[in-house]
Length: 503
Image (tube, rainbow, N blue to C red):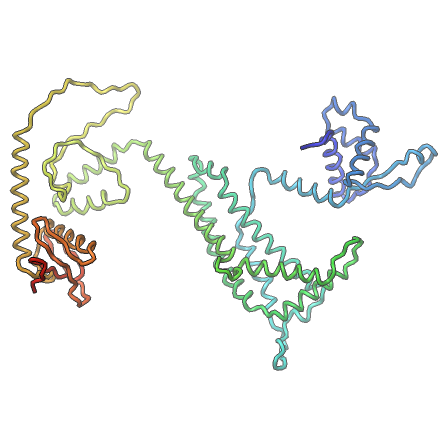
């Protein structure tokens, strides 16, 4: 909720912030009035007087946004009675204005970046914690002497400030960039065709970051694990002692103990970000790596969808004709089988469905056992309507009887072949002869049924009960088939009579 005259207050405070950036701190009302009127609408500016400005400055002073002091130079007693003040923005006002300026520049995006060089700089800064002094002899029970022991407190203060600032920059940029990739604006952009132009750049950027992150993170984790706690304690106390020695005029100054505690909390934040807190949840570094990998996969999925969407809108007539011509030029059916496996065996492959009468009821029949059929292509033009013809019901009882007779004969031949192959009470897969595809499919079906039973027992289609047992050799055998070779465990099938196993 905004107060009355909020636009005028915002203009006044922004002018103070801009002048503070130019190292001008104390401002007079007349120069404030001129700038504020330039920021207003012309009609409103003509009505804004110095008296209204004085009321606005008084209000901002009472709220604590401005400080004031009386101008030291007066020429008349009337000027002294008017108490002409000069004004300065308070520190809180400057910080708020700086924050508002950053938010305005950022806009509706998170910003951020994934720069490997930032992690490399952090590695170089952390190296000083493990670097020994040229002469590091020490007595038994004492810690070795490090190079940082010879540094001045001022140098240690700047080193610590640089270290923590680098860590904040690394983590904040990474969080902001990953948040931007997961935002609604980016998801909307990924659904546009222009996204395909930037897909390779984004994925390459993320992959290069992941490679550099893994390389730098291993070094950082190793150095954090090697840090001498006694050295760290001495460094942070010396840094705190230097910060206390800096002349400051604030009324509330932190003690050295409070500053040391704040430094240790910051250091613990760095350690936990890279190494975790020991609770088993994992570190923030692992979360960043996981989110980066997920972003790469998500971008690839969106790109795949866009590619499929574009290909679905394109005519495939030339592709189908080329593929059909390819099949027709093959002279060997085995070559056609290999080409079919390569083309139609692809995951999520789309097929053309031709509605033709069934030639067989066998569920194990293959596509090359079918007769060729015609496929009518309908034109994709607006207003096209297919001609309709009066249909009549044709009796096909003769054809159905013939198909049923052929099917029963085929099933009888298959059952006779199965009884021939699996004759006897004990059948070992190792000893089977060369079998047809339907024998192999039947055998695998029996194995599947027995695997689903706790007792490894099952029943064939003709009612024979059997039990599946492994040979115990642990070897794998090769079942020779007319259409190939199947490698499988060395199983033995026992056909049972009245629940007893015949061996």
